[in-house]
Length: 119
Image 1 (cartoon, helix red, strand yellow):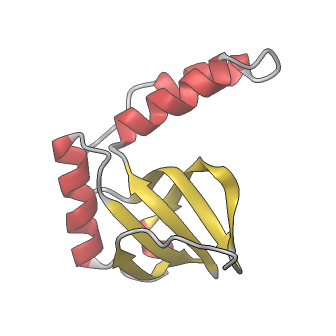
Image 2 (tube, rainbow, N blue to C red):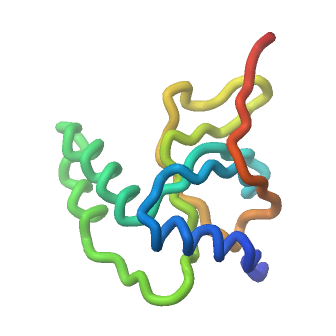
């Protein structure tokens, strides 16, 4: 088990404390490159809950994401929204997704999100 990058933990803590979703970040985790904007966990959970609630098949899972979080101590996860997994010159999904990444699993990161193009 690796030790989380303290600087990345500090960035995540600032996002959590400011309730802002404007911090763009790109990380490498488990060999995948994920790029997008960070959101506070409570905002991320609410959005996932809303998406699930709108689905007839997945509606029952919605409540799991609205349950109270423990929020004690430093953040352990990054919560991305409008995020993409980069694969060559393509971002998956095109419209952006909601990803939760353990900070301890991040092997590299940079501020900002990468854009991609087929040009």
